[in-house]
Image (cartoon, rainbow, N blue to C red; front, side, top):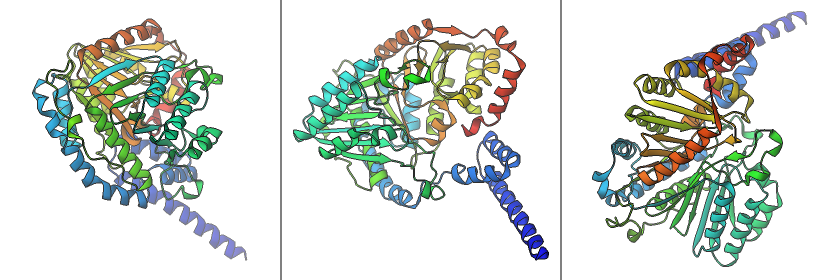
Length: 487
């Protein structure tokens, strides 16, 4: 019997180390950023069994067999649909110096052109955003499509829900797609039942099912925020469907600070097609509409006809690394100034190097991030990047007016990128995101005024004071920095 136990023990140990070695070899053979591979190897070598399990759950981009099949069936029809927009981009010769390369990149990799003739409105107050969305829903006559990462019941968010129910009761088609993890409070509330009972179609995107954790990666999230009404009005930006007065008030970080862009014009159809992609990806049902050519006619006499809006999505089934390419291209084309805002700052090596290079080349670079963060690990990991940014001349500002959730980049005061993308690995490479690259001086001027108000509510990090912070803080920062590529 003792020989049997000895043999079983040796067999288990051998199997254990074969698994560890096999997973480690797989990590080495995968083409991915060096820091990502190193972080996974360190995790496996420090805590072997735990590290292997975590890697099998979250280490590779496995979306599941059914979603892969759907993507295969969707890709060509959606590419053809977006190519049919090209005639609406005939005024591309009027694009600014920052917009042109982004248009070419997106067109070649995505097939989505920049479109002219849009009316854009920057809305910066949470309650005002919800009131405007509610009113537009009440005015809807044909359809309302919404998708959000978080829908949290309470306050004016409930008014939006009531407006959707009323719209459905008068015959408007209403579809809502929400992330399964981010919106779990909504799915556990009475509002989900009331809305479905009224005939509203509600889909849980990327639902979290522990029984299927080894069949599909569980941490991929649907992070887009898009509202489209009657194919004529759209909203997108950083804000979830939450009333900031009722959301995470016990976290001690203040109210969340966000922006949304209200759009009318041709780019509404680009956002609606993106919603159709997400809907089919989750349900298998095609809701992609034929293009109404009247809504895509270039309007040369329109006030904003010469200013382009580029819709830039990322996520499963879409070109890899595109969002990061867009950000890098924008940074390297800057000549005077760059102002960035992000609630979470754990950049890739490429993004970090681009910001350093811009600052060292004489471009004024300002990074605005929250002073208090709702993520302990991200807070400490982000601190590890401050020293080299400060040495390069980047100004780092800690916002004191709440949790700054706005995700934006303003280049030279006349071109901006606004959307859902955080400056972290998860947003850049994993989650489903959407950004707008806007070539509109009027909107950029309004964004610049808003960013100046953010700066007025922030304190700038002093490089000398930062260098003299306690040793224990530096050690904690370096620990989380090691695993930053996995956050």
